[in-house]
Length: 401
Ligand SMILES: Cc1cc2nc3c(=O)[nH]c(=O)nc-3n(C[C@H](O)[C@H](O)[C@H](O)COP(=O)(O)OP(=O)(O)OC[C@H]3O[C@@H](n4cnc5c(N)ncnc54)[C@H](O)[C@@H]3O)c2cc1C
Image 1: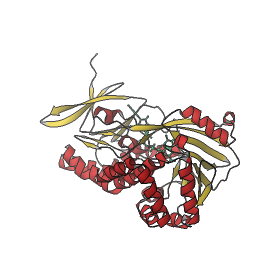
Image 2 (image 1 turned 90 degrees about the vertical axis):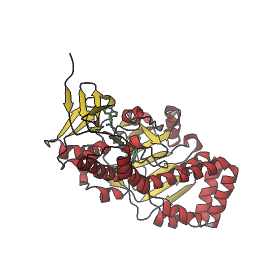
Image 3 (image 1 turned 30 degrees about the vertical axis):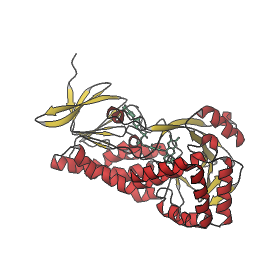
Image 4 (image 1 turned 45 degrees about the vertical axis):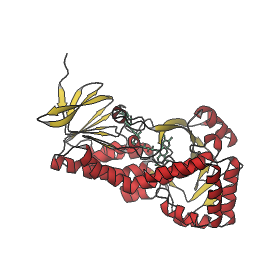
């Protein structure tokens, strides 16, 4: 039987934080919006360490029940166990990620102009011409839908992006929640060349529950066991376990004819920490304003979306993501000894307070420039770059991209 074609102005693929927040930002327009989500329940499976900087509350109004805990110390640990503790004005939130994903869905789910198709998989799309205008015909596991604009909020393995030739490099993450006796006020990061693409973490959720995980590009299960063993944690005592995929690299091309990408699909993620929430909330505001302009002016070309969305993201978020990427590229080449040396320098030159004052979990440009002014750090980096000239070339390429 031939499927009927349904019509909406706009379809968003993915009802996680990016898709739901964007939908909320557009909810008071008269646009007929469809959100397609392959899972039946919003927010599950939960795949997040849930540590987010204070910027969260500048970007959105956060109900109290979403914030489970706050930490005031970042504990950084080298492979040989040397520790630096940073504390300052940045007191990140530990959030209930499932509740955050549901927050904006709950606000808009009963709006007349908004439909959610849950438990339905987006499968493909193609361009069509209608009255000389380009539009998009998409196909889900259940139906065909015609829209003027398609938004890919479908995560790191985005099928919307893949159809347009965009493929993210990814790393894998594994995490358990356990009862424990670590410090409730400290988020810890364990650096090790064995999981050089990210780090191991302990994030205190509150009520003596800790989220313990690592991110790496290979052998995640084996390395996770090594990490938990080193922390003397019995995996069998876990409350539950999460897996997940984190995109890794620089922000992608995110503007196309009638289509834009937002969130993990766009690789709007910090390569130093794997954190994406602040970045995607920031970019969602640009996306919403661009989409409103597209419909007001009936302009859906790549050029228009690039000018009104991609450029803003590139200037305000993409540049910072480049710095995260350069820092990560260097850290990937660090030997155990390099970590020790750098930590020694930080301690010796008493620059912990500088990091505490100027360190910004999301926007690191200022602190990087301040650190480069320290002769010991500068010398360390010059020696490191001379040993790894490829890093220098890659960094230059990244900055000029
Ligand atoms: C283990 C782990 C820990 C993390 N910790 C942090 C942290 O502490 N702080 C932080 O800021 N960030 C963290 N992140 C990153 C953060 O979770 C992401 O940046 C964020 O979830 C991206 O949101 P998104 O909406 O773009 O994509 P996602 O959350 O990936 O959501 C994509 C949605 O699209 C749906 N979907 C995908 N394909 C289809 C399809 N074909 N059809 C229909 N639906 C589809 C999926 O089901 C999903 O609901 C972590 C990530 C992981 C994996």
